Length: 420
Ligand code: LLP
Image 1 (cartoon, rainbow, N blue to C red):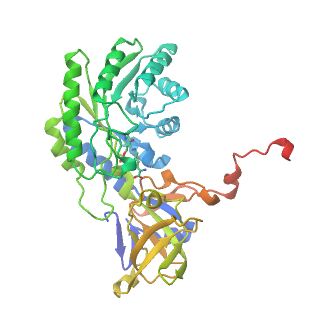
Image 2: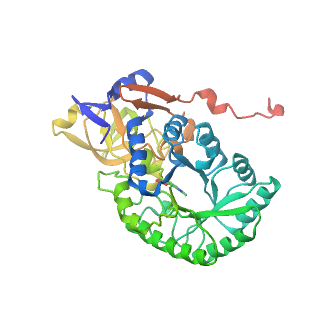
Image 3: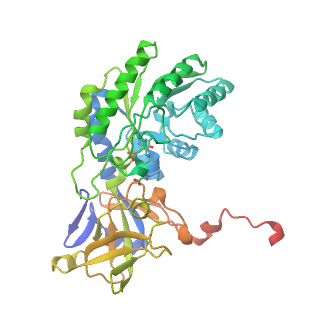
């Protein structure tokens, strides 16, 4: 639990007592540990340093501006999936030549925006996108740099919703199709081929699927090079898993050791980690509202819900849940409980069948490893206000996003005049 620890039964993030933050700003809130974020990024750089890697942090995992700025200031690039993410990356100070644009549905406006910004490259998902890109680049008298996203049709052994490199996935192109798109690209005046891209899925906890993918990419690269197509960037995507249950997952160094012999040093390596940079750096702090006993279960009703953290409801994901004050855990008196939110759905749970000490209204809980795809996937469902976010740097905490207000809920709504 690096960066989060108990002292005298109280949970701390570095030198800051979490209970005190809760007293200051109220619950629920996301809390991020600066040192963990920076450390995670640096581990990738260090592990792959012989390839001078460009780490393009996946903005979708957590695009809080302060987090993005921290990473940008350390030299980290951005993997973006939308115009919004491009906007954020530029606001965070990411130079355009460290931005790669992914996605299977880039709109004309998004492409134009990215061309104006002169981003490093577009990872093209299909033929028609390439043609549109060429047309728009021509209009702007620019040359668009591209990679083609290849789907290696490999099972990354993860949740089916996030396995993006399977044969039936909507992303990328088969080898055969990719070769055709590369050939077409050589004929287009406003397109310049820069590299090759793949991303096989998320929360991958084995090195095998990456190795298999890399070997296949090497094959396609050598076929391309035989036809005179030069590849300069090798982008293996993101997907590096984290230990949600304290299981062992490969570290960046272990991935690097396994993959290095197969990475050609002539290419610049790009990786797009999201979860592995911010996942274990974040916790969601919530307060117990009620304890409810029914004939079959005990429910701990807390003040956060599936709108704040949808992963358990959506993927049946497991997040460890700890008491912020763990005095009760000692007496060996724990109870089997479900931790649920206040939303009008039975799918609104944060954890099921968990052993926790006796809890009372007002007690605080920390839901761990929620730095990635936590706030990023939150919503206003049930018209709940999106929560605040704080960042702890050593012995201080900073609010990096205020919680929403009721006025925010209607800020963009318009009542037609006739209805007034
Ligand atoms: N690159 C591409 C092209 C991606 O599609 C993704 C994630 C990443 C990089 C970053 O993947 P990561 O390193 O974070 O695994 N909402 C799901 C995860 C969806 C991931 C989508 N694509 C979850 O909560 O588990």
